[in-house]
Image (cartoon, rainbow, N blue to C red; front, side, top):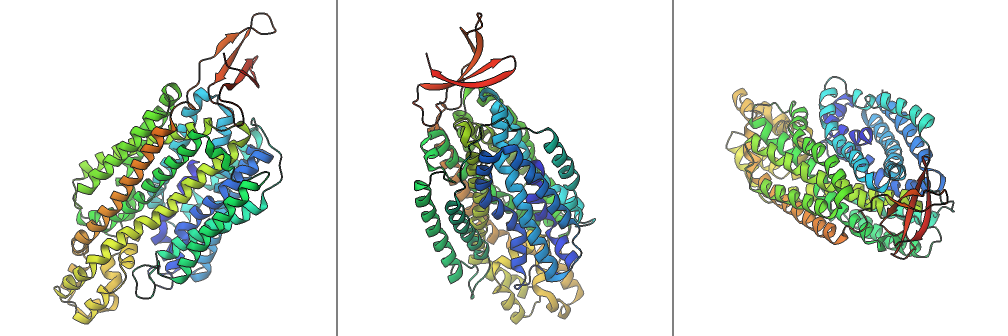
Length: 582
């Protein structure tokens, strides 16, 4: 899980070096799609496929599907690392193998939680899933630092770094990992698989292209193809829901949502991912485009240092996630998940009142507390969801949860970018025009640059490029050297965009606050009844002295609430028997 999530974020920081290495300018309007697809393809593929791969794990063995994912992931990492082409061919090669890498990642993500749930008793799952959650979230931030360190040396290394782990992990998994869960042999729900994939891919592709300018508009949400893909995708997903209600062996078992802990837990997970997903991108842009240049860092250095300065959030998560997992095993998930989301909402509010040129100590403290809040939520939420599932549905249920999380990441990127661009579009043109003409740039050139889509400025800051140098291009040759030095220096652009960026930043953070509050409400109403288990008790047995059983307080699907599962522990063997609770 750590390697999978490192690879989902390592490319973000390495993008400038990758594009320089293959000889493409990602800010060229004809090449922007390469930038977006290299960023989004991994997330889109995992979001689409995790449910199907989780269902395959239920049917044919979770360890087998997990092992296959490790092998696919490793092969794709090798193929990415050996990229030898340049230009469009190299970009298409990288995007294609990122898609394959996403397929391997989907196998891993869909089955890891289910394997852990099978392997651990209910009163230890919070800790186990908490450690797994730490790996997942920590990887997304460690990838930024690792990418920032390796990419300037050789961009191929950002893909090569996971190969040794993949080779060792593949060999270990095939030799040592065994299935302990319940298998449910069934026919594959092809109609459900196809409609789900088509509908979700249409929506994800629409979000990707909605971020690009269209016909004089700052974004592409008015593009007929984007609108058609959104509407068509939603229509196909509605058809998918109708198919699943009638399918004998559905891909998306909608009856699972009748389990309150599963339904509300997934709603909370979805909203938490919406709030957290875009945060990473916003903080990168904030640090790389404004704060780091103002504090003496060159634009080329900002990708690495942005990752380093965001580490307090990872530290907070590493501290709280395992601890909250242990506490949820003992006292339930409700207070931890609800409290974690409220803490996160409070830190988002504090970020709205923080000046754009902030004191880093205060910023680091807010990131630390935000990470603690997210960690308080993550492990208990996942444990509550997985504990609520019947054993035969854990792979599909885990895949459904991963789908909500990954789809929310893509959706949140679209939402946060859109909100920031809306804020920039309102005031950036006048700020650019006035700032450039006031510093000697000819009025026609300043007017042309002021009319460029705000997304160009945003992507330049996100990639660690010098935005003014990219925007002015040949026009710089017409200016005196001292004026060029000032315009392309570390203070002109950050000071110019501080106010416009602040407007968009506040709107984005208020969206995150709303998402966290909804997640907190869903967590509260999900309750605790499906997360706590009774301690093992001794009952009379056929061997004379009785033997120990552990009563799981959650009802299995299809059984009345008073009917639990007793896990008999006798000589190290664990078997499940049904019986009436006292």
